[in-house]
Length: 321
Length: 158
Ligand code: FES
Ligand code: FES
Image: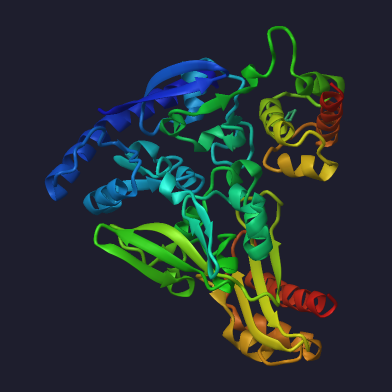
């Protein structure tokens, strides 16, 4: 065992040596500009501007790493093939949580554990706090970041349904400037999003939910601390004094190629008396609106059934609150 | 080839190593420092055998590039005992027969240590949550949870 791992370690280093030579040259030749190369293989800038400069210069050639909980798994057997890393963890400007009168602004490098433990976020954004507290295990939560979860764009990413339900906006920065993208427009397919190779996700902006908001979060998975959930749901209703639903947002994860909001269900719920919501009807709408796949975490049939059941259950709980 | 100099605190000692960019903390600890208490099970963040404490939080050292611990504090299972005196958690694991093959034990201890350093009187549920990311194939977990509970009580008394 010991011997083996020693071998692996040295193999890795040798392979890395070969690749890193290429890595040092290529960006120079292809994109050579005036960024000094200290260690071309491991870029760990402390300022965002520097990081953006590197990003515009290296693009996909440098693997961006924050908490590493996805990247180190994806690259488990190919670590030596990585020619350049762009490590964001020294950029303290990306680690802030700011709460203004209108908005909650979360830096992309804030960890799941920080969100789960933050009393203000628990109060203002209970769906996100709950989802963050159920990402993987403690070990994963202490390293994994909200920005990483978003950029990885797995349809099963735990924080994504809550972000959709809260109508979050993502700030994408590059040396050219910034743009803001609605969460709904960001995800385009499994592990795919609209980000450009020269961009970095810097902030997540969430408008304060109205005070009369009630919400439910649900995660279905096989092992509690398993990395990947087989289904997530974030349901958010704005209900007035007379129990009328003024607006509804129903977001689901791992039931389609991207996390998504179910418009038909939202439409059905909007402007209804909460007590008059027909649970079966709502369950059916949810079940019909998704397009799940069958994989090792569950069959299509199972996902439809569970979507229906948790939708009904969540609404029932809200009626009885 | 470009290597990175990393300076960090390891079990209260200042250390400095030069590593390739993609080297994992797990390998650095085992291969360069001979701290083989930290185990590799899955290598992908699911088993917790490689758990160490980084700046007060439990992390999977298989998912941490060593380059990222520059300027930070790392604690491994070897850093628990003080001289000949075992950490209360270690003693409690022995007393409660919470160790069988022992492969998961260092990771369990470090997850439990990270918990008790923050929360001196955890409930059973909190203990289970803290150990969620640690798999044991031998004990059935009951003894482990009992051991952590007992250690917490002992530490609180002291
Ligand atoms: S070896 Fe790191 S979690 Fe299994
Ligand atoms: S004691 Fe053997 S795996 Fe836990």
